[in-house]
Length: 90
Image (cartoon, rainbow, N blue to C red; front, side):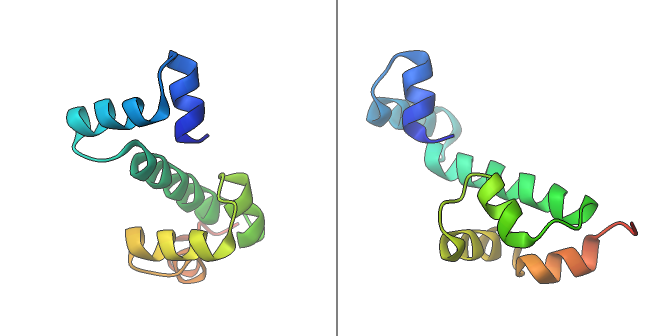
């Protein structure tokens, strides 16, 4: 899901959706969506053996470099290190 998708769903312009969201939650809608994607990836990394790239694309990231930088920024570690540390024994 993208900002434009959210805006379209509620019938407003994407820029206006971002403005309202930022005013209400003190973060941009796009940053919130990235955080939600990373949370999804964290769950998947800890409970599946699916390839990291598959999970990245499944979560809505369109670029592996964007995925890696977002994941590192929000968690402080790489996806591989996260999986190694938090994966439930399968």
